[in-house]
Image (cartoon, rainbow, N blue to C red; front, side, top):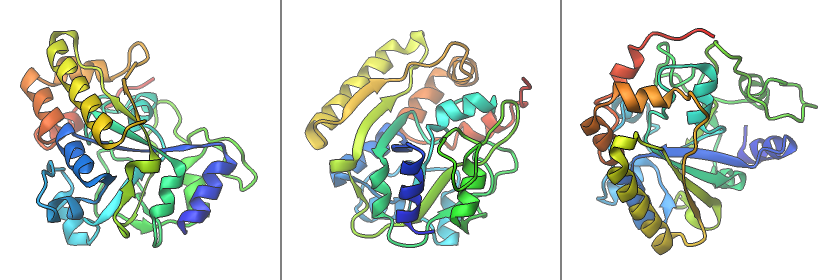
Amino acid sequence: MKARELIAELKHRNHSQVHHACTLGTFRSYCALGAYRSRAAVRGAGLLLTPQVSDEDDERLGIFDHLFLNIYDQHADVHRGRSVTGLNKYGPLLMVLDVEALSMYAGEVMGYATEITSAAYSSAVHDVVTLEDFRRNTFSDPSPAGTSDAPSRRKGTPGPNMCVHCKEENGGIPFAPYLIEVIVDAFPSRLQSLQQKVMVEVRQLVAEYTPGTKVTQRQCVQGCDCEYGYGTVLSDEDIRRFVYETNTHVYPRWLRRPRQRW
């Protein structure tokens, strides 16, 4: 599947945004480059790249220079599936981009067969995605005539990762004109000083590097699983490191949590 096919399908279903989550540490590097860049590009520029669980496998598989975008906000999506903790495992900052950002994908679009929050997930499984496969793995109505962008996941069941990726070319995905909004997760009330510090820095970075982009603090639905993730699973130091440094120190702990049933 080519990017233009993917964009046409999403627009046909009135789906206007795609997403990428990261740490504040990595977002600083994106800002310095003025774009969402691949991990290979960030590292090659000598900038901070916070480690991810799949880095070693992705380098081995030759996709370390790819750009990854989720069709849905994975935070809310994970909550709908009652999976693990409700947090996006790649960081507390969510970049929301216009669907036309996918036009920067120059090659064949690839994807996953398994959701990132599933214990069965393996970063070694990456396939070129056909439009038919994408519809079937993403939407509740996978028919070519379907106009709804409602996700295929049903409550209480695992679902697809709904993530696509492609090799970076032409300098990645520039913030202008594609970056619409940056959403910052809401931390427990005991960490309001950290919350305020993060919000101030994100607003400053956006004002300097991508003026016009909206910055908001996430407003979760009542009972969102992230309340468990941030409030119980993670210590204050875990959360601080999750914001600035890495996700590798907490990811295995999340996977060990038993799956809840609706």
